Every structure is written in structure tokens, then in C-alpha cells.
Image (cartoon, rainbow, N blue to C red; front, side, top):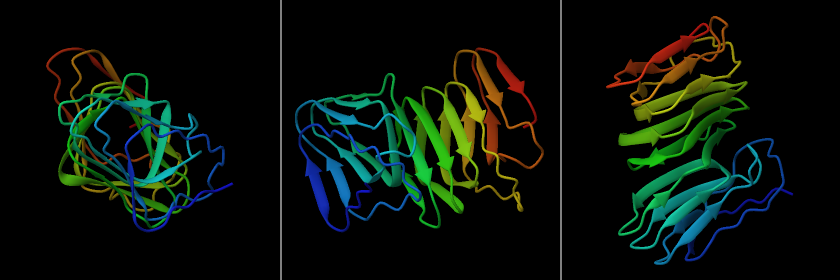
Length: 220
């Protein structure tokens, strides 16, 4: 069933294992903040399925020890990166999905790099805020999916891999937030959109590549 954690803080000093199999119909998952702050090596495990076993609020603030992100990790409310100290954030093969389901703004704070990144909207108007001083780097694929509106506000997303838009929402307004997606990978990249006018509308897009081709595919 659905798990909602409300209020207060949980400090996780060891691994976080998520075996919840519930597909959430909305992505409000309580207000509790889970802070990953152990001094040794840790793993944050996702359910492996988009929208299943969704975390509410996650903060990373480690003085030492690596943190490995494993599988597909769905987060609904906030993702805060403060420090890895002397450790490293290991993201190879992982996906972090920021999932929305209504008026709650999903916030991303602190500049850092992830593997693959997904913004998914499946209910209502979905606002995602990359804080103004934050650059979120997607070293893997960047995907915008779902069938509801996606608004990306404020900060910057650096896309090093392919960018794919499968979002099918026909927008009534074309203000998609004041965030910026910058394509700046050094290898070949593809920007693929939904192929339908007014669907899967992107916020500001910047192309700034030192090397590698960029292929535009479909109607963007």
C-alpha cells in the first residue's frame, strides 16, 4: 500500500532500501525529510519503476563515504544536495525521476551531477523548481514524460546526453517556466520532441557544445 511519512526528520546512516510496489495515483508523500548523512559508504535504492515507491523529501549531506544511487529512484517533493565531503556521488546506471501530481512544487537544490534524469507529470499542473543558484547536470538521458503540464522554473539543467520529450499534454498556455535546459555534452546528442504542435512544450533551450553533433528530431 501507500506509505506517507509526515513531519520531522529521519537521518539515514546506512543503506536505504525501497521495496514498496505501490503505484501512486498522486505524488504527495508527506513532509518528512530523509537526510542521508552516514560517514561510511551508503546506497540509496529505488523501486526501479517510475512512480512506484516514491520518496517525499531527500537530502544528501555526507562528510565522508561514497553514496551510490541504484535503480530508478522516484522523488515527489524535494531533492537537496549539500555535500559529499571526501566521498563521491556514484550515479552510473541510475535514474532519478522527479514526479509530480498536483500543486506541490518539487524543488531541486544544490549543484551536482546525476545519471539519467526524468521529469514526469501525471496529474494536474506540475511545477518543478531548480533553485536559482543551482545547476543540475544530467550525465545520462534527460526525459520529460507524462500526460500533464510540466513547468520548470528558475535554475539550469545541463544535458550531457540525449533529451527526449514524450509528454503528451496539449498546453493552453505556452509559459513553461523560466528555467533553462542547456545541451552541452561533448559527444553526439539528439533532441527529440513529441512531434505534435503544442504538446511537450520545453522551457528555454540553449545549445552550447564544444564537440559532437546535435540532431534535432521531430517537431520541437
